[in-house]
Image (cartoon, rainbow, N blue to C red):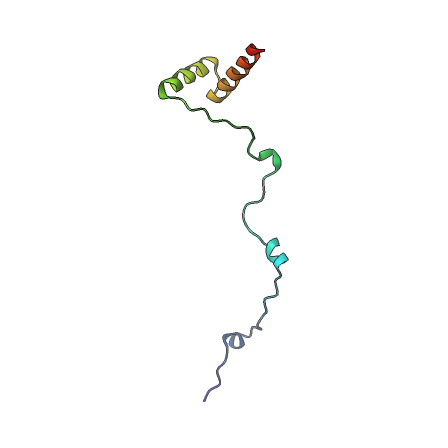
Length: 85
């Protein structure tokens, strides 16, 4: 009978053992790198919900001042806070 040979012995490759540790596997972690602090999401966000007619009014007012809707809402809120003082 013929002796069974492994594929590694036929190809002339030596078997290698896996000796990676937990620390090495952590180091080789793939994926996207972490963002710097300056690019993280900003804090203190608020959501404002408008009906379609209200949104049209706010958009037209913002466009008349040449601002975005978000900037217009922020400026209006700051002006109202100053008026109350």
